[in-house]
Amino acid sequence: MTATHVGASTGASDAASSRPIVNTHVHLPPNFSSFETVADAVAHAAAEAVAALGASNFYDLRVYRAFAEAAREAGIHALFGIEIIAVLGDLQSAGTLVNDPDNPGRIYLCGKGIARFEQPTPGAEVLMARIREGSDRRIREIADRSAERFAAAGLRTSCSEETITADTAARSGVPPAWVALQERHVARALQEELFRQVPPDGRGSVLAAAFGVPSGASPTDAVAVQNEIRSRLMKAGGPAFVPEAAVSFADAYELVLELGGIPCYPTLADGASPICGFEDPPEALADRLLARGVHCAELIPARNRREAVDTYVGAFRRAGILVMAGTEHNTQRRIPIEPACLGGEESSESARDAFWEGACVVAAHQWLVASGQPGYVDGRGRLNPAFDDGEARIRAFREIGAGLIRAGAPVRSRS
Image (tube, helix red, strand yellow):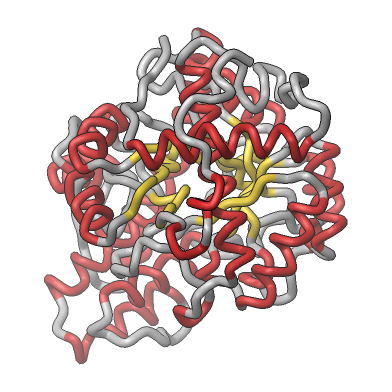
């Protein structure tokens, strides 16, 4: 490993008093996002003194060039990622919940430190195109079914895949081809039509007719109405529900590696009640991830109690699994970019140190792979063998990444 000493040694500078703010998971427009544009996201990160910001978009990564440029100008280290919805067939047939509390076998898998987002390998292009096609087809059917439900409830809309795509592209300032629609896009379009056509005192009855049950959302709370439209109509058992396209875990894992990234498991933990069977107890989750070749995990602490965050972080790190934290920013509610636990409670010092460590390792991996050197994992998901043990590997990559983040080093994408 020829770049072991790139950047300054962290040493005492890694003390809690000087630990930079990092976030490894936000969604950037045109994905559904709290932010209007990439520039908006970077401006908010800069205003909050964020040192490293990681994007984890679904199915189209072409906006990352603009993200890289804006982050560089703002002195923020950009981390590139992807999020994929896949299926573990064995757990689906067994009825086991993974990290989706409503759909057995459905798994969200992320890729961190992607170094080939601009010119992916031919293998990555084939996988991405197939996954994107299946997702687009599913959302098209969801949009049509949802619009039919509202039409039957007396609200006729022009909401279709084409109109929602065009509107999303215009909002985000990107070409329509870059828009990979999600359920949340459809829910927002319907909510906006409802609010435009129907006064507040009549919205509840329209929603009740569309849902087939009374609405519990405030008729003036746009985000609450969007969330209810999505949960009542589009989730399993809802009248507009369409099953996910059959993307296997193996294909999702391969796509992450073809893009030069590290496979990473986003952990729901006590964000579900009860905790999903795959994730309980935390020590068993760590073993299950390692058995599937996943050496990196992530939390979205805002949905977890501080005690649960510490429990999962401890279990992951004892197993030699990297752990990091993000916020998603995948609703229209603006929250701080620095990850915090449920209710805004600050994460513990040990958790924040682990999150900083994880971000540093991802930054190092991204930089090294983009430079043509071995990363934290190789193209088959195997850990870099050039170290005596796992902790030595993490320390070395942490040192490299800390230097890169603190120095605001330019990021590169390798073709």
